[in-house]
Image 1 (spheres, helix red, strand yellow):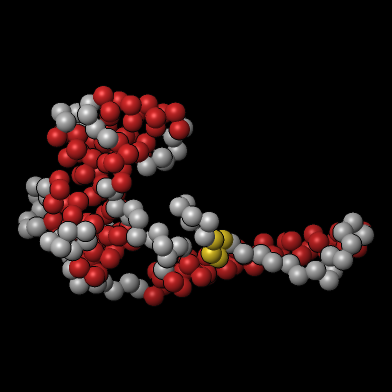
Image 2 (image 1 turned 90 degrees about the vertical axis):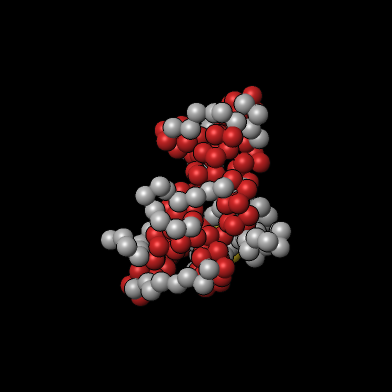
Length: 211
C-alpha cells in the first residue's frame, strides 16, 4: 500500500478518480459518510449497498477508459457476472473474453472491488465516522440463528429418538448430537461457527480484508 493512501478504498478511488454523484456536494469521503450515517437522508445506507455503489463506479470508470458502453443496465449485469452472482461459469468466461477484446482485464478489475468490511474500516478507521445503531437492529439476526439451530436440534432429537425406539441405530441414545451452523472461508480451509464469527466480526482472520 502506498504511504499516500490510507487504505484500499482510498487507493482505488485515486486510481480511477471516483467522485460522488453530481448532485452531491463535497468529496467522495464526505458523500460516503453522509450516506452511511443518514445525514441529510431519510434512512442511513447499509455498508453492502454503499460498497456495491463504489464498485460499480470503478467498473464504469474502467469502461470509459477503454471506450466500452457504460449504461446502468450493462454495468449492473456485468458487475453481477464479475462477482459470480447467479450466473453460470461459462457466461462469466464469455464476459471476461469480451472485456479482454476491449483491452480490459476483468479479473484484475474485479480484484479492485471492495467488500463491506473494507468499507467499514475506511469509514470508521480512516475517517473516524460512527453512527448509532438501535440495539434491536444488532441482535435479532443472531437470535434468529439460535432459534433456528434450536428448532433443528429439536426435530433431529425427536427423529433420532424414534429410530432408537425402533432399534435402527445402535447406541444413538448415548451419542452426543452436535449441531452447528458453520461458515467456510472461500480462500482457505478455515471453518467457524456462526456465533463465533458474530463475536469476532469475521469468518477468517487471514482473508477478511479481501474484497
